[in-house]
Image (tube, rainbow, N blue to C red; front, side, top):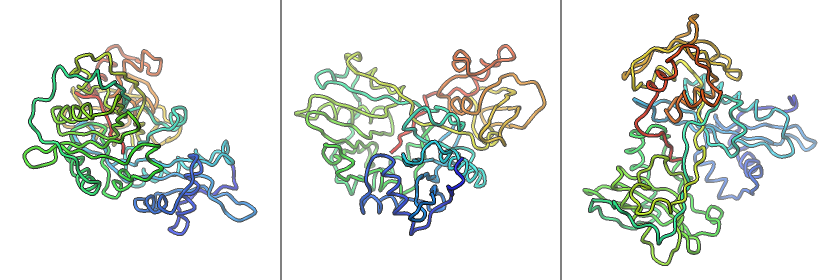
Length: 403
C-alpha cells in the first residue's frame, strides 16, 4: 500500500487533468472536445482520483467514477452505482491504488443507499476480488449478407426512415425509457449520458463512417431504432433496440438489405435473441459470447428484499464477503412474487457461496446449480439448489444495452 497516494474526489479545476490521466491509461490522448464531453456528464462528487506526490507537485495517477443510475431487476427498479473510467497509470500499478479507489466508491454507494453496483470490465481477471460477478452476457455477431434470408421475417407494416443525428439524440432516450423497465439488467441512464453515448468524433469511428440512424415508426411513435456505421464492405450495427421482436426483426431486415455491402457485424446482442431462429440458415450466423455487465451487491439484504421471486420459498444463505465485510454472514431469505424479507440468522446455512457468485445469480443470468457444478457454490441441504434456481429464475436472460 502506497501511503504517498491520496484518494479523493476532484474539483472542476482538476477535471481536465483527471480526463487526461484517464485517456493516457487507456492508451489515448485527451482533446479539448473529449474533456468537454466527459465533463458534461461527470458528477464531480462521484469522480475519484489518486493523487501522487511528485517533484513537480501532485499528479493524478488513477481515476474512477460513478454514474448515478438505476437498473431493472425482477419486479421493479433499484438504485445503482455504475462504476466507470477505472484506470491506473502504468507508472503506478501494483501499489494498491485500484483497491483503495474501489473501496471508497463502494463505501460512498453504501452511504447513499445504493444496494447495487455495476460495471463493464476491460479485463475479466480484475473485479471478482472486489465482489463483482458476471450478471449478464452478450454475443458479437457476424454474418455474410448472402446468408441473411429470413424464414420468419417480421410480420408488421411499420415504416422505416433514416433520420438526422439531432433527431436521433432526441429519440434514443425516449425509446430507451419505454423499453428499459421491461428487460431485467437494463441500466437506466440520465439525460446527460446520451450526449456521450452518441458522440460521433473521428476517434470513435476507427476508420468507419459517422453514424447512420434509422427509426421504425408505429402508430405515429418511434417504436425502434438502430445506429450503425459502414467500414468498407461491412455494416457495423452498434445499437439496435425495439419495443418488441417484430420491430427489431424489421430493423434487422433493413440492415441486411443495405446495398454494396458484404458483411454485417453486430455487438452486444442478447444471448436469447430470437433473430437466429428467424434465419433460413442459422449456422451462418457466427456468434461469439462474452461477459458483459458485472454486478456487486453493496447492501446484500436490501438487494435481496427489493426484487421479486419466480417461486415462493425460504433459503438460508451463508455469504462470504471479504471486501465489503458489512455483508459477510448468514441470512434467511423469504421471497415471493411481491418481494422478499431478508435478515441475518444463526440457523445453519442451506447454501454457502461468495458475494461475487450471489451477484452473478442475482438477475437470473446463471443458476446456482451451474455455479455448484463449477465448484463455486456448496449445497448443505438436499434440494436447496433447485429451490434457489426456481426462486431466482427469470423468463428472459438479463441483458444490458450499455451505451
